[in-house]
Length: 499
Ligand code: B12
Ligand code: SF4
Image (cartoon, rainbow, N blue to C red; front, side, top):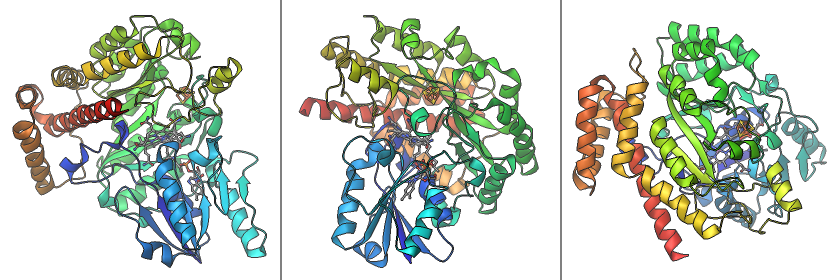
């Protein structure tokens, strides 16, 4: 049997980094870990190929080769997913779907022969047994969430690592908290399950053996969700990095209570964690209470500063549109983002994702607008009746975006962040000298010559060179990211003025 694994295309969002990637000569940041894991779950005798529409196009010959087409996707990929389904069906192929979109959607499920809801570690082997017996079902849904101990090492050979700028591995799934808007806990549960130290380090070995150097994203919902296991992991992770000469710079997602744990922070620094994404959401206490986010307690600015003092650049998620947001929420968010020195601030408008506590509350209150959530909370769309006048909310949201990604504001935060995140060792990168020279030339040509904001770029460049000359790769990466966000905002402006 021949299986074609397809990762549909992502639209342009904050996380696509589409305007920053060309500087590195890449088309996508992360390889599709879901399909790499699914590939490892397929029976050995199955022939397999993977097409990631974010780095290559889907050809008719790809589909013709296959007996079955396995497609993954999150909500944000649904347009492309539907197109691939249509093409595969037109060629008479069996279509199998899985991933967060088909797991959490309440829309009518796409036409497909087999649909996997939830994690596939137990259901996929069951499917192949059923298939052999001629008894395969349409829907597969695991009765219980599988332990991570049975999650296989992803198939790193099915993708061309060189096409991506960052590798991903997963240590845990789920999060112990209960934020009202969150769909993670509905999909992956509130009891964080982890892989064993051996499993994770085997994945590190595999990447190292294939010569990967540079960033590795531990794509957990909350890396410190299961603190007991993480504490047990950290010394081994530190040791692995030391023994292998620190080939990877690590990034992950965590809850803000990371700031309460000095030992863990220290271990993270030693293990080479350089970036962490935190769900900060809002500086307004009443809105945090509404969001059921007690873990974001105390002085949030101090917490961010403390994490930065361990050499980690903080990336932050922020939300406007809570019922309790005061009239000056927009100014308060801008002020917070400025003072926290968070260059990459992902600000979104509250969106009710299907099957979340928020969705259920708004449904009870009769406030859902019947619009599907787009899966992208960074475009100016609302899918429920807000307490604040919607026009004011959208205008306020856009004012935040315009302010924080103005070159001068952004570059200042980048410089502040560099200052707060001092570290002693050089960050590993996947590039050789020639790549670095090429990337540098492309960036300087675009930001320092062609771009209308070139004065601000040179101002930043000179200050970075003066104060952080040993961290120029990092500084230029930040400049590229700032350019991505600015361009994205401009494109949203066009979309919004057209609609
Ligand atoms: C890493 C990550 C990203 C990365 C990388 C994405 C990528 N290229 O793969 C980045 C940072 C780019 C990202 C971005 C976004 N993300 Co994201 N992301 C994740 C995260 C944390 C891990 C994904 C992962 O690799 N998991 C590991 C794999 C092994 O797990 P899995 O995907 O669930 O796959 C298992 C099963 O689902 C199943 N399966 C999956 N596919 C298939 C297919 C078949 C055929 C079968 C049989 C089975 C199967 O088998 C696998 C093994 O059990 C998840 C949360 C999570 N826990 O998964 C959110 C998550 C997927 N992201 C989410 C969202 C909303 C986004 C954004 C839209 C955010 C934004 N506002 O911009 C963007 C959009 C992407 C873009 N580029 O524009 C949501 C999706 C919600 C939904 N219902 O669709 C999630 C669930 C988290 C959340 N609530 O915020 N994301
Ligand atoms: S801390 Fe993050 S992952 Fe955990 S419930 Fe809250 S939003 Fe979801």
